Amino acid sequence: MAERTFIAIKPDGVKRNLIGRIITKFEEKGYKIIGLKMLIPTTEIAEKHYEEHKGKPFYPRLIKYITSGPIVAMVLEGENVIAESRKMMGATKPEEAQPGTIRFEYAITKEYNIIHGSDSPESAEREINIYFKKEELCSDWTTMLEMITNEG
Ligand code: IDP
Ligand code: MG
Image 1 (cartoon, rainbow, N blue to C red):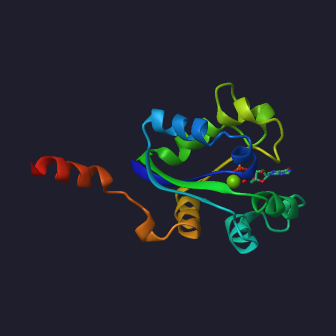
Image 2: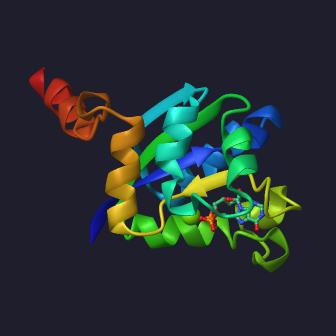
């Protein structure tokens, strides 16, 4: 089923110059990027994003981490993209991530693990709306391009 998910390259991924490599993996897999931006999350945005973790011991550090520098936020569209992109990311703890996954390749701690991805259709919808306005999503660009190229 065609779905949308929210992915973020976290500040450690940006600082380590992994933006291109990570985006390439999703593009090569076949997902369509329909939203893309770089931003430094405010505390308010970070708290909304991670509200499910409020009260956990690592929560204050998580908010500090995610607001510590620019992230690259994106919306991907494709068949089963929510679960499949999570598989591509690998387990939260890099030592449990399978070889070939993003976290296996690029991360060594569960705290600074390079990438975020929505874990369910509900969180995908919620997280996309935190970071993107509807008009910032370009779902129809293939169609628009076909229209232009068919004109002549
Ligand atoms: P996920 O990113 O794989 O969905 P979650 O359990 O939702 O993992 O945790 C959100 C983020 O919080 C993790 O990606 C990681 O950055 C951080 N985190 C999770 N568990 C811990 C922990 O036990 N200690 C420190 N940071 C953690
Ligand atoms: Mg999560």
